[in-house]
Image 1: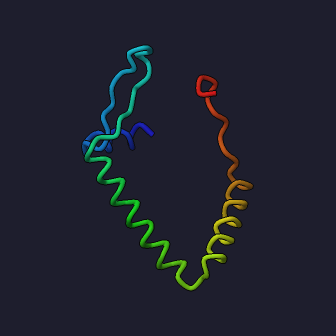
Image 2: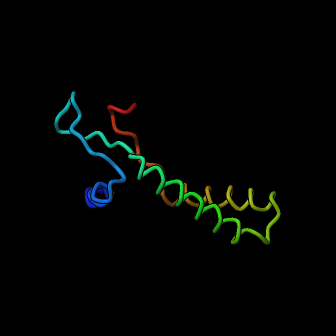
Length: 86
């Protein structure tokens, strides 16, 4: 995770600053550059999904998404939330 954050900071997509209440932690903030990059990636993903799912009806697309979610959750259950985030 640190290497991903370093790369995002190096490309000015995020700003990383010490948490004022706990210096062991960092506060990560999305920059305007990061927001633009995220919006571009969202567009690319939406375009790819439209192309891949084009042969399916909207109802079939919803059903495929539901079934894939069931499989994903079965094989990779969500991680428990950290104690301080609960």
